[in-house]
Length: 112
Image (cartoon, rainbow, N blue to C red; front, side, top):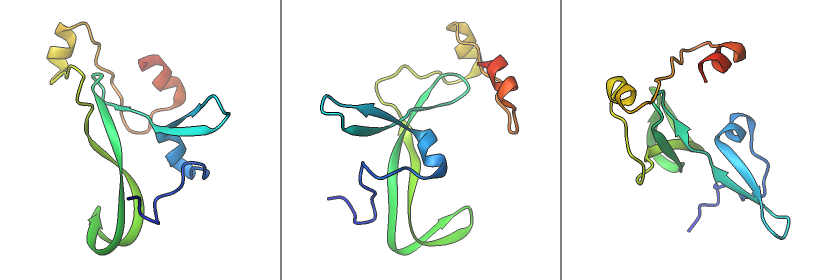
């Protein structure tokens, strides 16, 4: 059963949440919101889940969270082949992406 804090699928997504979702329009013109996969620098896919808090003690980056609704990485997408290292990626024809904090759009475009 969904928590009352979990947003309805037809509510607008806030700020960065939009970047973690994609929208599909079904045959009736209704929007269906899906989680995007999140990738690491060697092509492994991670799936997302929702975490909501309603009481209890929970901490995020050292700060107590009283309540809230969050997107989290819940783990690897289970049906993929996983690459465990840059070396294994290269051996299988995957070029590791040199992603670093603070990259401009132009720098990202060169890497991807």
